[in-house]
Length: 453
Image 1 (cartoon, rainbow, N blue to C red):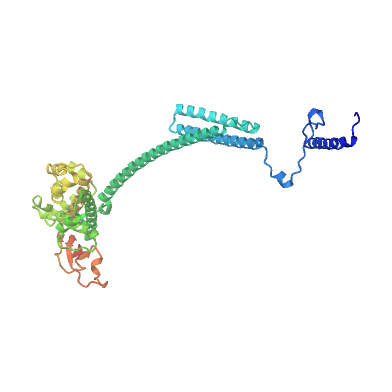
Image 2 (cartoon, helix red, strand yellow):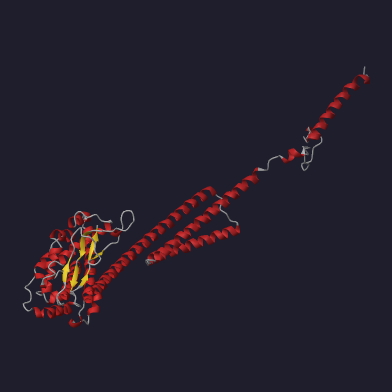
């Protein structure tokens, strides 16, 4: 009864032991501590995983390294943005300093100087931060945004200052232009005075030491050329004034010389010259232009007119008329002005009839226009005085319209009339009108100037 059959118990125990041993072996291999203190792995032991090499290389980096790189990059970008913003602020401060120096602004210079110093200190601090690698990475995105805003503000200030500087330079240039215009006007006035003085003497200086006994037709030609030049100067100014007043020059030229076809539009000025010459030389064959009675003693005529010529030759007409308001020349000048310058013309050119009123009352109008007219009248008067200094006296002539051109008595003011429409020479050009009259002194003929149609 106490004895047990060994063969019946042994197989069961053997199977149980083998099973328990397997469990212990698995736990040992996986590093899991078995219960009840059965074999434990050491904490410092590492678990080895036999992954393939490709799998090991493909495994991701730790998140801490990526975050650090991103933070460093953002901090660097924020630092660079602060650096550019500080440089822009320094530029704006320096631009303000330059602008305050011209024109000089003491308060503006002091303020701009403080701004420049402050921005330079800021740049120095940024330099030290860069060298020590002390970047503010608390909020790099906000720092970068604020720096960009500051840079834009500084650029805006710089452009505003540059705009003010350009405005100041523009004002300075405008003032320089105004000053130069004034200088130009002054130079033009001086040139006109010199031109008047030259015209008032000009070719007449050749006749300075002239004597009645040596008087010849060449002296008369010199005086006539001087008068013709003065007439053309007056006509040029008159046409310019008419253009400024809005006159229709074509209609005016047609009213003077109707039915004339001009070779070019610029030739219409000859119609105005013809009108002025016709009025100024009207009455030339009479002593004193028939304004006063002729001299009773014809034997004294030559010397009287020659003395008049020598007296007025080098004087300004204004001085002569003011000193001798009742002189024959003074009366001639006033009478011819009233005939050449129509009241409607004077009113349209100058807005009033003041010059006409002064001339009628025997006074001298103080205008450049009347000065130019008086100089022209003086030259015509001198030609008249020389004409009656000859024995026999010189006579005036002009040719009628449609007359055949003659080189003996005429000189054309243009060359186009000598060419036919096909380019060949015109054999019989015709006179359209006389521009400047001609003269005869004994057997000497001084050609008249004509316009050929």
